[in-house]
Length: 125
Image 1 (cartoon, rainbow, N blue to C red):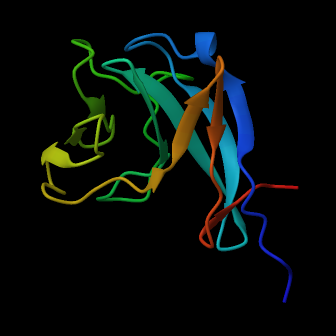
Image 2: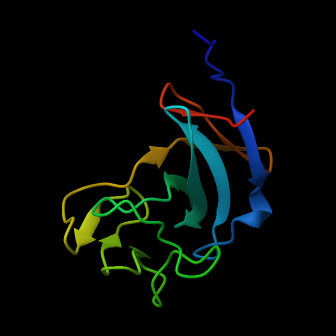
Protein backbone atom coordinates (compact mmCIF):
# COMPACT_ATOMS: atom_id res chain seq x y z
CA UNK A 1 0.00 0.00 0.00
CA UNK A 2 1.51 3.40 -0.98
CA UNK A 3 2.32 5.88 1.75
CA UNK A 4 -0.10 8.82 2.05
CA UNK A 5 1.25 12.32 1.47
CA UNK A 6 -0.33 14.50 4.17
CA UNK A 7 2.07 17.45 3.81
CA UNK A 8 0.46 20.81 2.91
CA UNK A 9 0.47 21.47 -0.82
CA UNK A 10 1.12 24.94 -2.25
CA UNK A 11 -1.94 26.11 -4.18
CA UNK A 12 -1.38 29.78 -5.03
CA UNK A 13 -0.28 33.16 -3.79
CA UNK A 14 -2.92 34.85 -1.64
CA UNK A 15 -3.34 37.61 -4.24
CA UNK A 16 -4.67 35.05 -6.75
CA UNK A 17 -7.84 34.72 -4.65
CA UNK A 18 -9.63 38.05 -4.87
CA UNK A 19 -12.68 38.67 -2.68
CA UNK A 20 -15.73 37.05 -4.38
CA UNK A 21 -13.69 36.80 -7.56
CA UNK A 22 -12.69 34.04 -9.92
CA UNK A 23 -11.63 30.75 -8.44
CA UNK A 24 -8.28 29.03 -8.76
CA UNK A 25 -8.85 25.55 -10.13
CA UNK A 26 -6.65 22.55 -9.41
CA UNK A 27 -6.75 18.78 -9.59
CA UNK A 28 -6.53 16.27 -6.78
CA UNK A 29 -6.62 12.51 -6.59
CA UNK A 30 -9.89 11.47 -4.99
CA UNK A 31 -9.56 7.84 -3.90
CA UNK A 32 -6.88 7.48 -6.59
CA UNK A 33 -8.86 9.08 -9.45
CA UNK A 34 -8.14 12.56 -10.83
CA UNK A 35 -10.85 15.01 -9.78
CA UNK A 36 -11.20 18.77 -10.34
CA UNK A 37 -11.34 21.16 -7.38
CA UNK A 38 -11.54 24.92 -6.88
CA UNK A 39 -10.63 27.56 -4.33
CA UNK A 40 -12.09 31.03 -3.91
CA UNK A 41 -12.12 33.79 -1.33
CA UNK A 42 -15.38 34.71 0.35
CA UNK A 43 -15.73 37.16 3.25
CA UNK A 44 -11.91 37.34 3.37
CA UNK A 45 -11.51 33.58 3.93
CA UNK A 46 -10.18 31.17 1.29
CA UNK A 47 -12.30 28.04 0.86
CA UNK A 48 -11.94 25.02 -1.43
CA UNK A 49 -14.25 22.30 -2.65
CA UNK A 50 -14.32 19.43 -5.05
CA UNK A 51 -15.76 20.75 -8.31
CA UNK A 52 -18.79 18.47 -8.19
CA UNK A 53 -22.41 19.32 -7.49
CA UNK A 54 -23.92 17.42 -4.56
CA UNK A 55 -27.01 16.59 -6.65
CA UNK A 56 -25.52 15.34 -9.91
CA UNK A 57 -21.75 14.78 -10.21
CA UNK A 58 -21.24 17.62 -12.71
CA UNK A 59 -18.60 20.35 -12.71
CA UNK A 60 -20.01 23.67 -11.56
CA UNK A 61 -17.99 26.44 -13.19
CA UNK A 62 -20.23 28.09 -15.76
CA UNK A 63 -17.11 29.59 -17.38
CA UNK A 64 -13.50 28.82 -16.45
CA UNK A 65 -12.98 30.00 -12.86
CA UNK A 66 -16.57 31.30 -12.53
CA UNK A 67 -18.47 29.63 -9.68
CA UNK A 68 -20.42 32.44 -8.03
CA UNK A 69 -23.86 33.65 -9.06
CA UNK A 70 -24.33 37.10 -10.57
CA UNK A 71 -24.74 38.68 -7.11
CA UNK A 72 -21.53 36.94 -5.94
CA UNK A 73 -23.45 35.57 -2.95
CA UNK A 74 -23.65 31.83 -3.71
CA UNK A 75 -21.73 29.13 -5.51
CA UNK A 76 -24.14 28.08 -8.24
CA UNK A 77 -24.51 24.87 -10.23
CA UNK A 78 -25.30 25.98 -13.79
CA UNK A 79 -27.01 22.70 -14.66
CA UNK A 80 -29.97 22.84 -12.27
CA UNK A 81 -29.46 26.05 -10.28
CA UNK A 82 -28.49 24.61 -6.90
CA UNK A 83 -27.08 27.34 -4.65
CA UNK A 84 -24.34 26.67 -2.10
CA UNK A 85 -23.24 28.88 0.79
CA UNK A 86 -19.52 29.59 0.13
CA UNK A 87 -18.28 29.49 3.76
CA UNK A 88 -19.50 25.93 4.40
CA UNK A 89 -20.59 24.42 1.06
CA UNK A 90 -24.15 23.83 2.32
CA UNK A 91 -26.81 23.66 -0.41
CA UNK A 92 -29.38 26.32 0.51
CA UNK A 93 -31.60 26.07 -2.57
CA UNK A 94 -32.28 23.54 -5.29
CA UNK A 95 -32.70 19.78 -5.59
CA UNK A 96 -29.87 18.96 -3.18
CA UNK A 97 -31.00 21.27 -0.36
CA UNK A 98 -29.27 20.24 2.86
CA UNK A 99 -26.41 18.41 1.13
CA UNK A 100 -22.85 19.81 1.06
CA UNK A 101 -20.01 20.22 -1.34
CA UNK A 102 -16.93 18.13 -0.48
CA UNK A 103 -14.59 20.54 1.33
CA UNK A 104 -10.82 20.58 0.94
CA UNK A 105 -8.99 22.17 3.85
CA UNK A 106 -7.06 25.35 3.06
CA UNK A 107 -4.64 27.35 5.14
CA UNK A 108 -3.33 30.82 4.32
CA UNK A 109 0.08 31.72 5.68
CA UNK A 110 2.60 34.45 4.80
CA UNK A 111 0.87 35.43 1.56
CA UNK A 112 0.45 31.88 0.28
CA UNK A 113 -2.45 29.41 0.24
CA UNK A 114 -1.96 25.69 0.86
CA UNK A 115 -4.34 22.75 0.71
CA UNK A 116 -4.09 19.77 3.02
CA UNK A 117 -4.29 16.22 1.66
CA UNK A 118 -6.37 13.61 3.47
CA UNK A 119 -6.87 9.92 2.97
CA UNK A 120 -9.57 10.85 0.43
CA UNK A 121 -7.78 13.74 -1.35
CA UNK A 122 -4.16 13.36 -2.39
CA UNK A 123 -1.84 15.41 -4.64
CA UNK A 124 -1.35 14.22 -8.22
CA UNK A 125 2.38 13.61 -7.87
